Length: 401
Image (cartoon, rainbow, N blue to C red; front, side):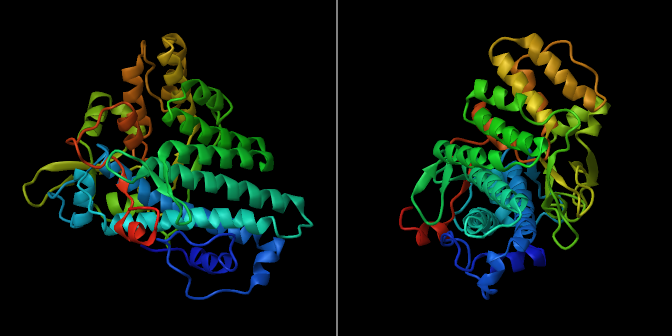
């Protein structure tokens, strides 16, 4: 993996006398900067930028792996550059506990959680003369601390069927409890939001978490206060020095993962769907067959959306459909479709919303959670439905067998 030098420097500086210890799977720093850097409000922008960079890499890689474990991506050996055996394990759900890719993703996530929580702890120790900097530090620390816990709950697991993770080398926290911790952090972020948009971002992430908890009324209420048409998405941002993993692992940079064939089926059935399901074609040098792969992120620095207003509409639509309010759901869905230049639907139901989410959230790492909660797993019984907590973490953490 390539890391921004900013992230590396940030990691070294931030961890001097941090508010807690490393997650066991996060390696110790090799050097440190003076503690005075952490007591200066002028360093807040530096710290926040470092968290943004760590978030981008964490979300980038975990979303690729999650779509690989789900039925979103396929590790196809007809692709000449598909050579990573650890990706083959992820694709088949037969993941060994020392899978190097999962180890890398777990370490990135541990860093994100630690950096965010440490920023909060350090901000509460700094004497601020500029209250806006204090609010910026606490907003971003709580926000990304909540997002990190959301990642643990959604993507990692102790067993094939039991999701969750551990924080600061502590006891295993099941997904439901980890989601609650994420919600608590997001609630703490809200008073420090410095714009209505920042408030809507927090409500949007809360909406998704409530949806994944099966709390549909709460999810719809949060989504109604979330991002609205015209709002930009909250994105993971990349640079040439820190490239988008979708580009390096499943795209034009290096192709190892291809899109599941159903996506070209969506586009063939309705060519207008190419707007939200952009695909490139690859011809195998081995048998001449044609495969398709994502072109949603065509450049090494293409941003990856983490949360969008369109998803908020779909969350509200799903909640309405579960209450048999299909007319309400249809209006919300058609607003999303219109935003992409798609034809309006004339009817909808819960099953069609599942498909609509599949299209709208293409290549964003959300399919894994949808498959689990709709009970539509595509692999045999006994396969992993989460990325496993790795052997390295299990051996280092006395609370996890």
